[in-house]
Length: 294
Ligand SMILES: C[S@@+](CC[C@H](N)C(=O)[O-])C[C@H]1O[C@@H](n2cnc3c(N)ncnc32)[C@H](O)[C@@H]1O
Ligand SMILES: CC(C)=CCC/C(C)=C/COP(=O)(O)OP(=O)(O)O
Ligand SMILES: [Mg+2]
Image (cartoon, protein in one colour):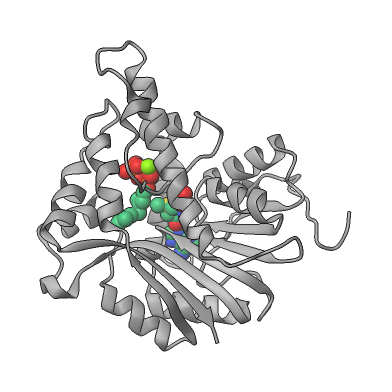
């Protein structure tokens, strides 16, 4: 084993640190207990398990006839394709990365994006999550794919990551920044990233032009026990932490087809209306921000 490889012989659950705050304990429990079919059945399509949403046009030809006995299966495959397309767009913004780079997935979930990043760039990918169940799941998948020496998840607070200062070439939050204070989060990304490194987030944020968080945004917060920030807060907290936006992309129109398709599936969870209505009334936006660490 070289110094850039690591072993995951032991289960993450054996090394669970005490949560930094009672709230983080709540979030760890939430994700340890999560097993929604909308996430597991989509992941089963090809073994990439995501906890984020989709973007892009629906391929109606691939869905075929709604009366077809295979229709539900095709719908699940299509929703999953749109979720993986979302991760691909995030990675398009990480810049050209390679074998020697270390990448960090902050709030890595079950690790679908980590596998994609490794397969695309060849980089070593480290993920952190509050959930031991998720870390074990991600490490199990890495083992099955025989990439466990290059892809690893650990139970750890993303506000206090176990990486040395300036060691990381690229880092991201894919729908995980609504669980933390943004100034604390960007200070930590800024610390671990090398100068010239790249940070990317895809997130849902409330739109300052709307005024304050709408009832739909409050409903999403209650549903996931999270705290959605405003677009303004993202840009301010980045500016305060040497992260200079290179691209800000409003993905709201691109994510609506995913939600409208999901609302017709048997895997609905009840949160679909809040996303669709808040995206339509302009109170909530799905945004990608890519920033240079300067
Ligand atoms: C909605 S999931 C997103 C998972 C993943 N990024 C994806 O795209 O599939 C949110 C993730 O954020 C993680 N998370 C929330 N707060 C965290 C914190 N303070 N430190 C580390 N992970 C955290 C949760 O454990 C969970 O894995
Ligand atoms: C854009 C926003 C506000 C996201 C909140 C974070 C979150 C829970 C993302 C999706 O997770 P999931 O894939 O587990 O959710 P679901 O079960 O709804 O698919
Ligand atoms: Mg999901």
